[in-house]
Structures are given as structure tokens and as C-alpha cells.
Length: 346
Image 1: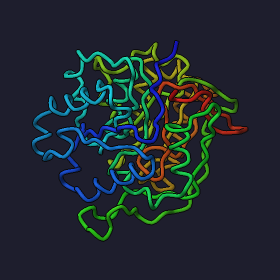
Image 2: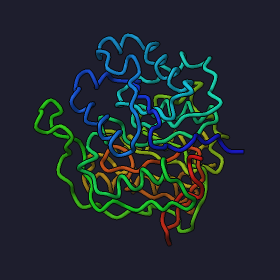
Image 3: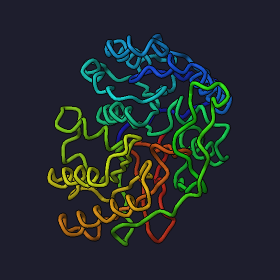
Image 4: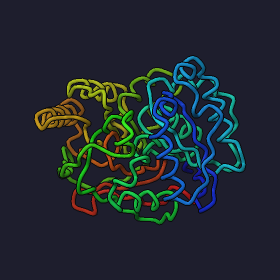
């Protein structure tokens, strides 16, 4: 039996906003407010900011228990349909011990975030609830007006109007990062877009199906060895998706991280691996990391049939897909490429 699916978003639903990591809303309130406006305008929802969503960054850094309380209250409030993370950071793992005694709601909520919020998405999935890897309020939602129509279409297809067989189509262009958030003239904008490169099938030639699990590679590394990281058997038949942050881990660092997954037995269990666009990589770096992945999978792991595809549209670039963690999906080098086999909400 798979994880429990939350109810879909409907017009008028309440979406709670939490700040589980860095206090970005207090530092860049105009960008944050642009994101709240976009969420209400585009999805027809009612935004409710949790008590510490706008607290000062220094204060939030010293009070993980307050951030955890906001998240716990939002997840257990019967009037809340979804919880959206305002921004990432680097220490949301400090919330996890404060959430150990939380009893999940009888009606689970949609939880959306990425980057450092990977810790919370993983925590929720391990508690048996589907979670959603997608744009945060400041990074992704605030720039909605600059995105192609397909960005909103795929987001709604996952959270609002779900159906079986959703096909993820590549965006024609992408951008990385944003102009100075402190400049009022550039609030809600992105760096110039560039043409997207094709997906790269690094290894494997056959289709694979499995339950989606993953997130930011850098953040998952920080969870390894803790009680909050899944055991090896959890990965049986999973489609593992990974993406790298703006901290730009080197190609060698990415391969070293994957080697840990191999030695722990994880890569012998997964059905396939999906990589988001490698943030900030040059063509040379991308070739280097793909060659390293190929050597690891084929020569060290001995699984040349394992499907590994890179350069997909999720993670630290815009626009990005919303991926439901805990939902079955299919990747196929012969087409249709990458699609969900079931909806992520009910």
C-alpha cells in the first residue's frame, strides 16, 4: 500500500505559508509579497501566513522550535488544505527532532517546497504521506508572471486538476537565479532565459516504472546517517530523482555522493535515476559529471541497464515541474519520456 494522498487544491482553499529555513521573507518582503499575490491570483486560494513566516532571519536561526511549531500547526489545522514553504536555506533539519511527536492529520495536507525543504518532504514521505517537490514562494512562485503558460498548466495538473498519465514536457527555455532581490525594479523577475538542452540518457535503453523519491542532492547528503534518512530497503523499485543547488557541487562531488548510494546498496535497488538540470554547470562540467555517472553505474555498480537520465526540468532553475514524492511514474527513452502513472492528490 502506497503513501496517503492529500486532497487537491480548490478555489477558496487556505494555503498556509511557513518559513522552515532561512528568514528570506523578512529580508526581501517585496519578493515574498509578490509570491503570495501570485499564489492567490493564479490558484484562487486564500493565503494564511503562519506566525513566524516573516520573523527576522537571525531570530529564526536561533529558534528552530518556533519554525517547527508553525509547520506542525499548519499540518494539523483542519482549515488548511496546503502548506507552502517560503524559501530554502541550510538548516531545516534542525526542525526534525521537534516534529517527532507530531501525530499526522486524518486529512493530510499538500506540502510544497524544494532545496533545503527536501528534509521536510522526506520526513513527510517517511510518515506515509505524498509530498511535493516544487517552487518556493520567493524562488519560483514570485516570478510566475514571467514564466511560460506551461509552468502554470503543469502545476495545476499536479495539484488542482490531477489525472492519470500526466506527461512532463520539457520547457523550451530556462533561467538560473534572479536579479538583485533588493532592487524594487526587478522584483518578480528572472535572469534572461536560454534555450533548453535536450534530456540526456546516460545509461539504460529500456523503460522503467517506480515510485518517485528524491530532492536536492546536497541536502540529502546532510541527512545520511541520521534517523531521518530512509533505510536501503526503502529504495526498492524507486525512481530516484536528484538535483544540485546553487552551491554548485563539483562533478567529482556528485559522483562521490552517488558512490555512497552505491556502497550502501541503494543503487542496486532503484529502478532508475533522474537528474535535474545541473545548476551553473558549463558544458564541460556537464559532460564530466555524466561520464562519471556512466562509469560508476556501468563499471563499479555493474548495472548498464539502469536507466539514468539528466537535464530534466526540476530543481534550482526556472521554470520547474512539481514532482509528487510517493507517486508511481515511468521513464522511457523511446517515449513518451517521463510521466506519472497516477495522480498525486485525490
